[in-house]
Image (cartoon, rainbow, N blue to C red; front, top):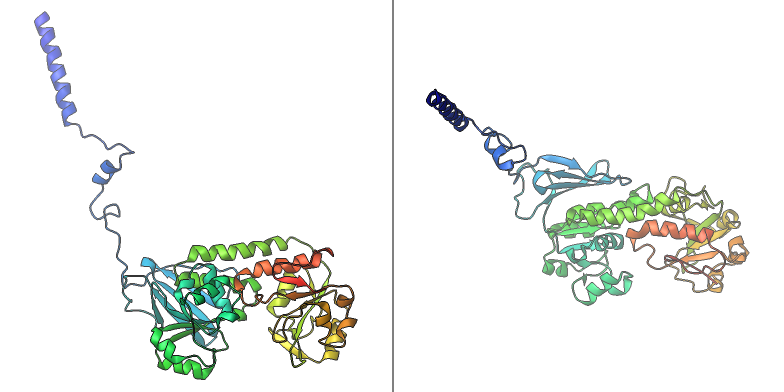
Length: 399
């Protein structure tokens, strides 16, 4: 009886052991190696990453808050297509090709091909140079049409003194031999580029893109152009930081109430001609963001830039302005209030002069485009400052 019982137990044990040996072990949920081994052939799990060399497969478009005159499309594999709108019928197209990648066969017709790293370029615009410098790509510029004494950006002056950045003459009469010797084939110019210079550069094989930031509606759109240069030089994160820093000033100022203070903005040339900012100029809009009112809000409506005015007409409109922002320009910089009032007989009669509220822009005001938010904040600080405030970053009081 005992032998039968033992035999039966032995048989059961052997049967359980055999069944266990035949059971397939399920892969553990957290074991990626086991999970991959059970995937079917041809699935995304074991397929190699697609090669996008020479292909244009759209991925996404750059997000822009204010800028309307440029765009950047991002493609798989690192390709980018940047467009600058010169007019409704004229668009400059740049195809930015990643390093060690080939030019796609379906590249846009007439596109300027920029093989990264993009360097050895000519820039004939101080605001553009300021943006490129701000994003950390100044080394990409080899040639400029402004001599060392014209610059107020320390990094640019240092580069020129170190012979890393070469002055090639005025933008109207550049030294073409220097451009050829440098081997430069790409340039950014302001809209002041003349037709004859453009034609000659074209003959030398230099592709040109015009900076259209001055056409933008919002002052901060000018700063946002840093994102275009960020895309060209692979400095997108730096460009985003530059823009966000300036945008933060505007976001904070949007929460404040209007000051109710009026401001006249103008300059007088050495020939005695007076120029005031137009009502829809970007400086007038900067003033509005800062909480002020433009004293000449009916002058040059719908226009940017400046307008020449007769002294008497200007006085009639601006005599009661609470503040004056005098623009350091062709007429030179007045160091004192007396030097300022000597420029025209009517100036001592203006309310802002009598109250000691005459401020002047610093010489770098129009050269440094990457700090426009800071400049707007300075205007607000001017409007709200007490009598003891005499110096801001981009404005100083005349005494």
